[in-house]
Every structure is written in structure tokens, then in C-alpha cells.
Image (cartoon, rainbow, N blue to C red; front, side, top):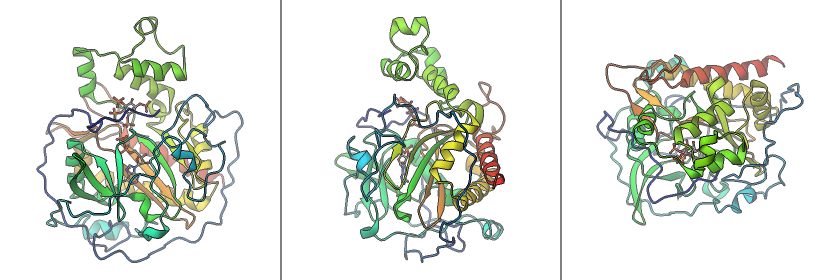
Length: 420
Ligand SMILES: O=P(O)(O)O[C@H]1[C@H](O)[C@@H](OP(=O)(O)O)[C@H](OP(=O)(O)O)[C@@H](OP(=O)(O)O)[C@H]1O
Ligand SMILES: Nc1ncnc2c1ncn2[C@@H]1O[C@H](COP(=O)(O)OP(=O)(O)O)[C@@H](O)[C@H]1O
């Protein structure tokens, strides 16, 4: 599912955002929930015991998860069954030209304004501080494995050195990231450092979340029950533009999926393709789907298009954490805390969050972090409309099913832990 890179980021035309641009000071590091301060570097606060507990999941037979061989991947063509990677964990990726990204050493051009305010409030911090097993630790540069992209558009990212990442500029994503730096959700989003320009290309500069880990395992899960914007649906009605590339991606997975008309045209509408992907995977039934998993041995699997049922998701999650109960517990805690903060967030209430992912990252130390990434299709809703993110979507209500998906995710982790 390698995607074609362009000179502009694959950022949907999502209309105007309602917030003006300004840059806040990083939040005070009063608690483990508070995001990393830019300076001084954070102290080392490892809060978990080494991973020793093994999660004994009763394996179910006949699961298709991770077994399809019909898709190609950004970071690997081998899937879970592929050969072990090099000690840097990247051999499965280099064949597709996506590892490691080129480095930019000088960051003098970054346009950063250090004015701003601290989030979340002291009350939030106090309430949450016993719930979090995550603390930001920057792994020294010389110990860091090269950055790896699990899924997404090829050519969209560059590493910037010093624990930062450049993502091709997308105006709506920039506005979301800036807004989020002032929201209670800030600890759950990569810290945003403004816009920078390199080789005539603008980039959004953000924290590289992998830089907090040593040989990380990474999972990208796309959240929500709908993966296209209402705006995209309207456009598809007004100016239908059937796409051959999407037809080809569709028949590569299921030659019988296109309708007779689509077969004649050899093309499908993007919204039709997206809906098909939703119902094929767990997006429609659970409100999230696994997009890709990269493990610390370098194996990388993006063959989850047909991972649909709870048992299949459980199988994939169990494999992701190597049956480690401590990691499952840490992820469950982190997601519960995220849910609490999402329910309070002004940003979340007022934005349709579509196509956004949760990035799960852990390493052998047992630390496990989860962050919201990819705000290219996150758009504000017209006031006074607000979203609960749980109601079923009907055209016009803008609901995205994000919290419904998160509820289901947490329930699945809870069930996995209950079989201990
Ligand atoms: O995953 P596959 O089946 O390859 O389909 C992709 C993903 O849905 C992308 O979403 P994401 O970026 O969240 O991964 C989407 O990009 P958008 O976010 O731009 O909708 C692509 O649309 P195009 O970029 O239009 O091809 C679409 O082709
Ligand atoms: N801040 C980050 N830190 C580390 N890795 C990231 C970060 N943001 C994105 N990635 C990596 O890039 C992949 C694609 O990110 P995403 O923002 O969804 O890109 P796209 O818009 O091209 O789909 C993720 O699956 C993850 O592997």
C-alpha cells in the first residue's frame, strides 16, 4: 500500500480552521502526564519494572490476521513471517527505500515562538498522575535506532536530528497541531515546533516519538468508524472522479469487490474505496483498525486490510506485545487516560477527527506510550455544533466514531487482561 508522494503533502482540502496561529510554551513537567519541555532535557524517569510477565492468551485457530500475502508495505514486504531483521531493526524496510530517512543537522531556520501557556491544568495533572505509566525519556542520539515509518504516504517525512521529525506541510494539520499545543490533549500529541523550509519544501516540525525509546515496537491504528470527510463525500457527489489506482488496490485484495460498472470503468470513487476498506476491516465494526505493526526485530507487517473481527485484533495485539501482560496493562492505562482527556478536550469536542491514528510505541524497558498522530483530515465543525464521537454517523452530523472505537479498544485490552 505504498502511496504516491507528491511535492505537496497529501492534505485534504478541508476548508478554514477557526483558530488563529500562535505558539505556546511547552507545558511544565509537573507530572508524568505532562509533555516534554524543550529545555532543559527531561530527567530519566523509568516508571515500569522490566518486562518479565508473559501474557498467556489462548490462541484461537484459523485467524487470518497478518497472513495475507497480497499487499505491499511501506516498511516491509515480509510480514510477521518474514526473516529477522538486522540489529538496527531496519532491514525489512530498506528494500522500499524508506529507511532510514535522511538527516538534517541544522535547525536554525525553525520559526519558533516561545510564548504560550501550560496545559493541562494543575487539577488535571493531580487527577491523572497516578494513572500514567509513561514518562518522556530522550534516548541519546548515538543509541537511537534510525527512524522508521510504519504506514502512510511515502516521501512524506524527513528526520531532523535531535529527536525531531519533519512532515510535509499541510495547512490544516499545522493548525490542528498548533491548537493542540494549547489543549489538554497536548501530552497525547507529538510536541509541535512550527514550520520549517528545506529544499523548497515546507514541513511541519514535530517530536519524533520513537526518540523516547530504545529499539521500539510500533503500531499504527487508524481511529474512528469513518475514514473520509463529509466534505469529500459532497465533492464525490458533485464531481465524481473515479480512480484507477484505487480500483487496482481494491482488486489486489479482492478481485470480486468492484461492481460490474466499476469493472468496466476500471476505476472507483475514493469514498467508495474508503467505505470498502472500512467494511473489510474492523473500522466499521469496532471503530478502529490496525494499519501496521513494526516489531523490534525489524519485522514489519501492514497486511491488516482483512483484520476485522475481535479475535483477529486480539491475535494481532497479542503478537505486538509478545504476550507481555505488563505492556498490555500499560497500554490499557494510557488509553483510559487518553479517553478521560478526550472527553474534556475543547479541541476534540469541536473537531471531526477523521483518518487520524494512534501510534503505540514500547520497548524492552516496559515503557509504553500512545499518541494521536495525523491530523491532515481533522477539521473544525461549525459552531455551535459539537461532537460526542460516539453517536452513529448520519450525513450532516459529522460524527466520526472516534470514542466509540476507543471504548472498544479499551474493552478488548480489558478482556485480554481478564484471561490471565
Ligand atoms: O491505506 P490505503 O488503502 O492505501 O488507502 C489510503 C489511505 O486511506 C490514506 O489515508 P491515511 O493518510 O490516513 O493513511 C488516504 O490518504 P488521505 O489521508 O489523503 O485520505 C489515501 O488516499 P489518497 O492519498 O487520496 O490516495 C488512500 O489511498
Ligand atoms: N511524530 C511521529 N513520531 C514518530 N513516528 C511518526 C510520527 N508521526 C508519524 N510517524 C510515522 O509515520 C507513519 C505515518 O504517519 P501519518 O502522520 O499517518 O502520515 P500520512 O499523513 O502520510 O498518512 C506512522 O505510522 C508512523 O510510523
